[in-house]
Amino acid sequence: MTSNSHPVDLAIIGGGPTGLFAAFYAGLRHMSVKLIDSLDVLGGQLTTLYPEKYIYDVAGFPKVLAKDLAHNLIQQALHYNPTVCLGEQVQSLTHHSATGLHTLTTSRSEHQCRALLIAAGVGAFAPKTLPIPNVDRFVGRGLHYFVKEVETLARKRVLIVGGGDSAVDWANLLSPVAESLTLIPRRDQFRAHEDSVARMRRSDIQIRLFHELKSIEGDGHITGAVIYDNRTRVEESIDVDAVLVNVGFVNTLGPIKEWGLEIEGSQIKVDSTMHTSRRGVFAAGDIATYPGKLKLIATGFGEAAIAVNFAKHLLDPKASAFPGHSSTMKEEKKIEPQMGHR
Image 1 (cartoon, one colour):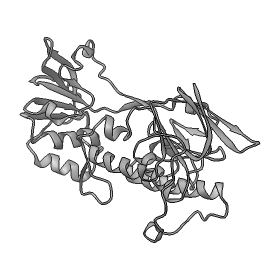
Image 2 (cartoon, helix red, strand yellow; image 1 turned 90 degrees about the vertical axis):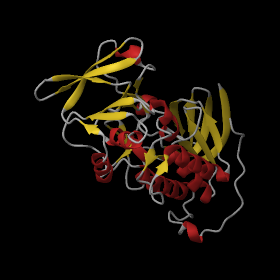
Image 3 (cartoon, one colour; image 1 turned 120 degrees about the vertical axis):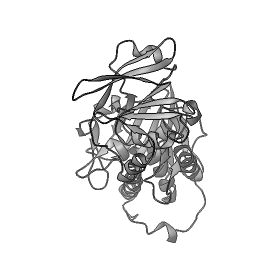
Image 4 (cartoon, one colour; image 1 turned 60 degrees about the vertical axis):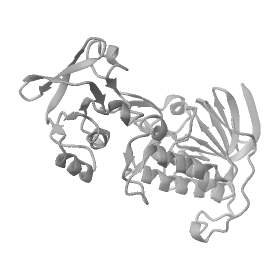
């Protein structure tokens, strides 16, 4: 393990939308930044889970592909040359009262910072899998939990399991390219934006309310599925080439839960300044919680700005927590990175 002893003003855990915008905003405030992520690429879920999915709730974009939003966020985040450390899983956090510094230990290195922002999304996560015997044999053979390329399901008979925003969004996106598309939510209500649901209802998507998946059929590749009405238990066999499962994720904070932070469920409690219960440690995005919290990318952007501004004021009490609007800020010389990208 290497040691990067030169401290930065702000270390950011998480290279998703919230962490990326925080890195850029910290640059605006002339803070030196280190951006750390366990993945080998920046962009978080936008890049790794659903790059071909449209995002509808980001200001300035009626709709934008996740991969395009990630590209723009990464370009913006790197504007002030933060040090980027990829492929590093966070492990422990130590505070040194004599110096006021934090030491963050990862799977590959140690990093010192004056303040820390945790923007790790939902933490470590994995998709909820189908509770069906032997279903794993169809993974990669028609069974999908993620879709990285729409073309994978083009001209296919597709069954989507779920009734949340991801299921509805994928139904709308795949409907024009799939040979046929059936959606089975287990209830008669959808946990999705009203406009997305309305567009889905206007399409030729077959929506089978109160239905669930009982089994998948096929020899080497999916050829059919058995679904059933959970009110009457009546079963029906349908011909499908692919099953896309969107029933949520199992997530955990991992080692972060051992850092002495106040935790609620699987989230970190913060105050109105995004400060956690530990001095100099902030949290923003899906990993942070407070009364009235909404888990949206747009919310994460605002929380990132709040956290960075108050971290700046904490480190330099003479600096205002509100520096003025970015449109009135003077473009100044970019901060040179403390270390090269890794």
